[in-house]
Length: 350
Image (cartoon, rainbow, N blue to C red; front, side):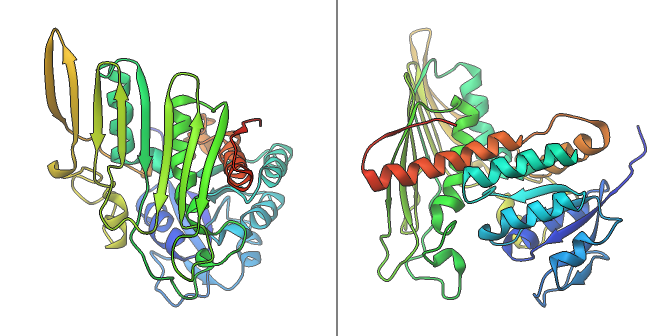
């Protein structure tokens, strides 16, 4: 086994994204050393990380090789640009940018600087989505004809003081939850021919989009992606219909709750393994028989993102999340907004 040469990391932003989704892996995995965190929060920092007041203090540290951007969405492009110009490898929390033009600029800059750039599309690594992939790849459903995915919450009140609840670029659940569902669908089916969307503000006194219904148009499969902040009773996370059967998966991946509770992703026995109550239901026909089965969920592991990132930086491995893929998620988000405004399907074009 080759010797581990840890990568020194600077984390910009210590809200939910930085504190829950990034810091636990940066401190638990021996491949990384979290050196500095730019935040004004009073929360304690993990390990021996040092708090600094500004992103500039992170970027000025020559020992830092990798910078994680976990700031509000509207700051992603500017901070990633500054980090690349400072000679750092960069991870941007999703969504990558506010628009495709910003993403194109960052991709070109990363190539010019000869630095790695990727985006934290961690929902590729959830238990529920990995199980859907496994079932679809097994062939038990036959040719898939319909796919519906939900990412819902129940929050009827407006969260005071949150930029995500304001009518500003990059706010609302379309950029938050919709980006995840689009990335997952593209992993399964590739890029659509067109995008059709119905985006709404449904909560009283709401300002940001809190309901989306996206149709990604493909020749042979119907793909629907939905999210709401008023889903008091949870829909299935995934419903997949095929010529030979169907698969329904309920229950959201458990890693988020585990991380919020402070559990260690490397020291928790059975990390990412869902309880049996969350396992999906498969109905299929085989050899003239109608069969119903419970499918044990695949384990989820966000840590695979960071293990791949280390291999990409130290060993030249292929990135799990390529920047062009993340850029095209943003392009689909742009087309969804255009479709909703114009009330028509909009052809997909990069």
